[in-house]
Image (cartoon, rainbow, N blue to C red; front, side, top):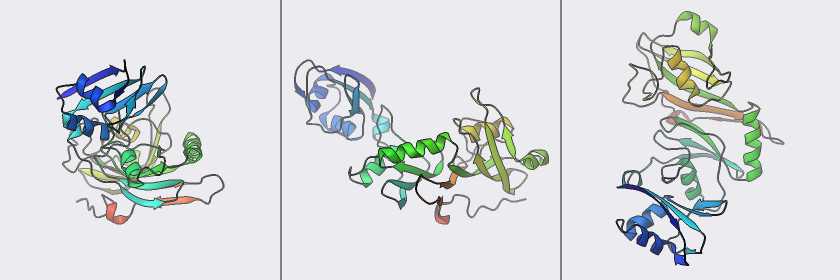
Length: 281
């Protein structure tokens, strides 16, 4: 079952009772589960937040938005792994299949919610950057608003170095390898992807990739545009199917926050997807 329902509070009510009355086709236990997984939004004027507590008292003029999807709510997500905790921010390994953040249909399949639960709600969580659901690798979560702001400025100034390992289809031509970069506008904006070859065969090439700009799906779109799509990419390219999934992993982050020494985070070998890869020539 999948449905969306906007519910206005016309008289004082308890959240779960109002939801049960408005959506009689869904049991209370399933509605409570949907609330716990972030599928119910509370709104009042310009204020909006996920409503998880079933017994919340609602007042006239407030609204609830239920976005219920049985399939999504029944899914489980692989766990993120805490790699470093600096109190003002933490560094995590996001496995493939986990969203960076939730949406109106819930947040239980996201890194941001897992981090919030890891700290038992005792720390605020701010998303610093994103990784595609199909990708894996390093992510930063800020725990203070000023730290999140500082990271935001670093991103705007291109002062966070992000390094990826990417497996693409085919053998790159010598001229492209020698050039070591793809300059192809995306969404009407200048975009540059730099790379070097780590391994290659006639069928596949493993690359180390650095982004100079940060457009949506930039790595995936750039390599598809030059005829060497990322392996396992369901959206871009052809003849690049891979049962192991999207061949893209964020393996290194380097930056310097104001007033702090330089920080470098490298994905541990046991979490590196391509650590033991040997391409057959």
